[in-house]
Each structure stands twice: as structure tokens, then as C-alpha cells.
Length: 153
Length: 271
Image (tube, rainbow over all chains, first blue to last red; front, side, top):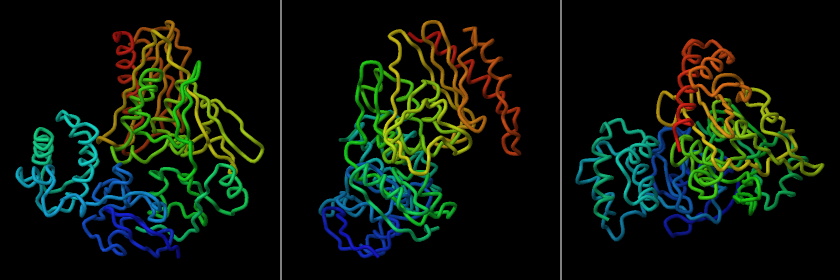
């Protein structure tokens, strides 16, 4: 067992976990932040995507023990004081989600991507979105929502 | 699935990492972990000791030298794809890196990890071999350098000894009027390529690299012609893809010919 501190959404969590425990499992089980979803556990589906030092990262492909001294951001920290982020609001308005399982990963991916590329083309959005599987929507409304969010900010 | 138990080590320097690698039994290095972690999650790999290289400072730098660009082994794919120095001097590398996996994978995966993993369909081994890059390796006997074309031995097998660590790769700068193209065919966005073709044209000479077809990247630089159809036909005849029930060898040969022709045409027409 290792004992270490994780910094998630600006708050510190004391964690006691085996080295093999994946970041996604520590977030959900130890930090009780269950907004990060775990899908495929091999980096394909994108549901567990969180930010590590601002960069989107698969939380199923890193061990929590590797994240000491890193800044982690999860979906729980995106809405500020109960107000959805422009991207979340756009997904809500464009019906960009149905069951919501993939949504946290999509929001985290594009919170980072829109900072890097604030005015993406539809093709660029689709290329980045290819890293997040959604089995409900057929993606069209997600793409529209992301483009709406980009146009409004 | 969850990985099997392992002991975790986080050396703060290269010499400390080399020391651990010599001392520990059944140890594996982890950099970005974008290939290793899935294999560990599926328990295809179950190392007793995991040595995390991410705390070693300065191993992710991209430095322009007189004739080459030296890239630290911990440089992430996204860094390669977005670096101005690489865009200017080794554009083939930047373009190929932008096609690796997905956005989040590129944030984490590293140059050194991809070279050491040596997937025969991966972008970075193919580009390193095509551009005749040199790989710098640290070991208990000091540092050595090896040509990328000699580094890749077979399927996920390299000239790296178990006690060595890749520290950097040096890519020659492209010629002032050089041309390049990178094309790949994969079934879905972000999948490994069924066939990938990297192509450079400098001083009237073509170099064609082909990935995904045999057990390591193939490089052809004695093609004699720069006629796209002729070169594509020659390369098609010289590759020997394995028969696979899901990807027939004939299909891969077709892809090699089509992608090579398009890559050469792109080199000849771009300015």
C-alpha cells in the first residue's frame, strides 16, 4: 500500500492505495468522485478522460500513484457555483447527450481542446471526438453543441 | 480488467532509473503507458516492478542542432505534432504524430515509449526509420547511438538490452526544398494503420517507408525512378505481408501500391 496525496479540482485528498490502482478507480472509490465513468479500461472509449495538468488523459491508463504533485480536474469541477460551463450548457441545449455515460469524458476532452483551438472546424471537432465513443446520439448533436460552444465563447 | 500487483518506483534521475533497472528482477519501464497500461490491464504483461520515468526532468525537450533536431524520449506525441521546430525542420514527423491514436492518447504517449514498444504499424518507428534517425540509448556502460533502421529487429522487438533506456532520438533536418508525405489507411479513426506509407523526396531521390505490412518498418531508398506508378508497382512487389484471415495479404499489397502512388504524387506536386 502507498499513501499519498492527490489534488483534484483544487482540493487535496489523502489516498491509501495499491500502486496498481488506476486513477479512475481511486477517483471513484477513494475520492468519491463518481462523475468520471469507467468503460473499456483499455483507453479506447474515452469515458474516463480527465485533465492532468490541463491535458486530457485516460484515467484508466495511469495509476493514481503516478499523479502525486499533479493537478487533476474532473467533471465535478467544471460547473462553477452551480452554473454550467458554456460547453455543458451547449450540450444541454443541443440535446448532445442521452444516457450520459460518455458525456463526462467528452466534456473534459473539449474543455481542454477548445482552450487550445477556440475556433475549430467541424472536421477538427470530429477528429478529436473520435476518441470518445457515444452509443446513443450518433454524434451529430454533440458536434453541433461543441461548435455552438466555440462560437459563443 | 485491473492490472496484477506490482511494486512502483519513481526515480528522479536517469542514473537512478538505470540503477533500478540493473538491480530489480522482472522490471518494466513506463513512460506514457499508452501501450503498456492496456496490456497490463488485460494482464498480457505482469511485471513485478514498474519503473516510472515521468519524474525525470528535462527528458522531454526538443532542441534544434546544426543538422538535426534532438528530441527527448519523454516528449509526448502532442508535443511532436504541435512543435514549431519540428513543423519547420521535420514536418513528416509532426504530421505523422498528429495521426497517432486520439487526442487524449497523444497528450500522454511518448516518443521513446513508441520506439521501444516497436509496434510494426506505429507511426513513430516508421518515420524514424524512413528519415534515418539515430536513437540515443543509455545503459550501465554509458551512452550509445544506433540507427533507427538497425534498431527495429522484429515484431515488438528491438536492439535495446533489458538494462538500457532510450534517452533521445535525433532526426536529420529536411532539405530546404525537400518534400514529404505521410498517408495511412486504418479501418477507424485512431486505429493502428493496416498500411502506412511515409515518403520523402530530396535532391531528386525518393525514400519510401512502409509500416504495418511486415514485422518492422521497411525502407526503400534504391528505387531508381520517381515516376509514381512505377515506384508504387516496385514497392508492391517488394513487400511480403503475412496472410491474415481478417486482412488478406492481397489487400495489404493493394493498399501499399495505392498509398505509395498517392504519397509520391503528393511529393511531386507539393511546393
